[in-house]
Length: 160
Length: 392
Ligand code: FES
Ligand SMILES: [Fe+2]
Image 1 (cartoon, rainbow over the protein chains, first blue to last red):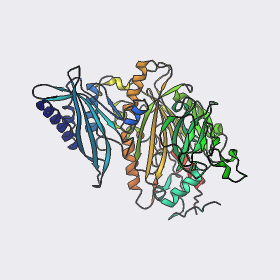
Image 2 (spheres, chains in turn red, blue):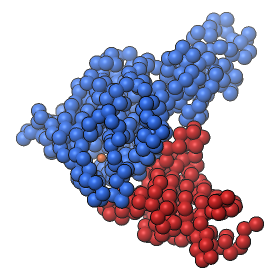
Image 3 (cartoon, helix red, strand yellow):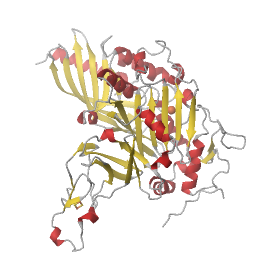
Image 4 (tube, each protein chain N blue to C red):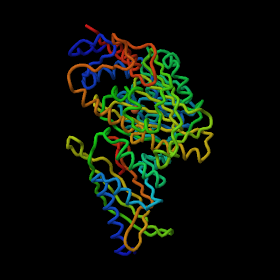
């Protein structure tokens, strides 16, 4: 049984993550990862089912996370058609792994609203996260967004 | 019977560099494109044998609006069938990829072998006496392989494949790494909200301008050649300047060229109507696309490694594939943005006109530099003639 306090920190982290993406605060997004060694990956479940493991986004070191922020905020700025996301999440399991990290699975559904203010579903899937929790805060050591959606209805600018 | 060419609001422009914007969104024109181009005398690159490497392996895909099932037969040949039962038309395979010993239609349980022949049909004693199994095999497209790439055509009038590909055939070989010995790494799939012609009209002009990363990484050396073909293909072979180390990216290892077999060179083969094969850095990428409507185009990016790669090289290719050239790629995301915006912009009257590499009378300069756009106009001439659009 995981302590209520730990789960509260995990949920606070997930909320901060979503708040950052929904407000396009990429510095805030970066701050959700363990400084120096956080990793992020977004891939489809098709990739797992076919044993291929080619992600849509792969930030397998902290510098890559920093580069993703750089591209979204500077390199691509002014070129892409922007959209706003709303993430809806539901934690479905959590356990403490042998490495001391918490392995947390969370369902998500992401809606997006286009420049013309029309709203559709962007993707659905689950997060599989390895989370470090100390007395006062939690951070993602590894965050994986695994999409049930195989063909995304538009190109993805922001991580999921 | 031939469908009549729909009339445009004004005749097709006389100057070769001009295009009417209405062709990018009109439903009637789209329907005719499916008939005259996609089901017409062209070859489509539908996949690579590395996607279905052993007998029984299959992949489903679409060309134009036709649903297809590719299957690796016991005899080692990959065949391309209609993904539709010859009995009453039920879709045969629903999965994107898989492996099966035979194909059984769920509706009335007709069974086909890996080569597409009808093996059994239940209740056959009540079929007409004239029914012969050999008349009810899976409907097959004419299919050929080059360097493991699988090409199909719907039309008996298509030229021989090697003539159709021309020099693009060798660019494909080089882009694959010399021969067919590649392994599938995986896919990225996306829908762009642009007309298929908007999603396949990229040129060298935009590369260093739209893609800021090209400039930042000093990839606009301009040393390179473009070649066009009478069937509407375009190939580019370009040299890359060595990227400045550690200046711009926090993780410059992402853009390292590690394949020891070659100089820093990019290959692009853009095949008419809607295929693309790209080798850039260590990314080996095949794009198979199909129009969902005049307004949306689905693109499947397939990535490969070389069979001789060790695990480290394979991981490097996977990393570059994931981050560089796909729908969210660092040096390609902006393309998708432009496809969508070209489409919105097409809902305005009149024509658009290419300029860079164009002669004073709107023709095509005989020498096309790497960053010119006029080489695309050869493809547009092929389009115009296949569609039957005239100047009066
Ligand atoms: S439709 Fe396939 S067996 Fe009848
Ligand atoms: Fe581009």
